[in-house]
Length: 139
Ligand SMILES: Nc1ncnc2c1ncn2[C@@H]1O[C@H](COP(=O)(O)OP(=O)(O)OP(=O)(O)O)[C@@H](O)[C@H]1O
Ligand SMILES: [Mg+2]
Image 1 (cartoon, rainbow, N blue to C red):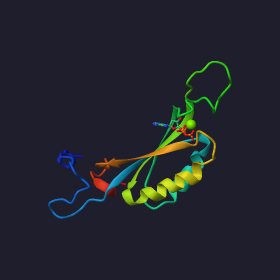
Image 2 (cartoon, rainbow, N blue to C red):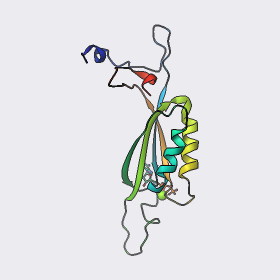
Image 3 (cartoon, helix red, strand yellow):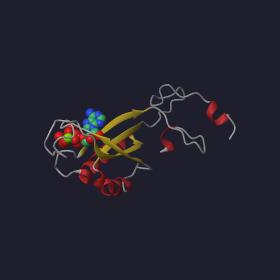
Image 4 (cartoon, helix red, strand yellow):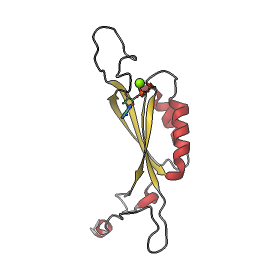
């Protein structure tokens, strides 16, 4: 593709109405850290939701407020342990975030420490590399 598709500068305020009077639809990123054994259930729950057009999954390690102690406690000296987790990242239209949060909690919950967390962040811009589309239509 020629450079024309990417020459357009990033809109500094993509969620604000533009001078043409057209607002752009807000996007939010949801980053979930869950138990690896809950991945299939969470994926299935999310994939059925309107507004979920894709997701990225990574094997990660981390600790929360127990610092890895309770989940793999074997006695002995105090060390901070990293526990294997899975991170799911998805970007969705802002209006879908509530459903995404509810679905993740339903599917990832066991009630034991270490069930994980979910963080929501604003996304300023998106680009579909193949076509040059920008904004929420990329999702
Ligand atoms: N503040 C944080 N920032 C980034 N990642 C975090 C944070 N807190 C937890 N995580 C990630 O989430 C994983 C699961 O955290 P966890 O569910 O144990 O949180 P918690 O606060 O200890 O809650 P709980 O008491 O239910 O265990 C961690 O292993 C880590 O990867
Ligand atoms: Mg914990």
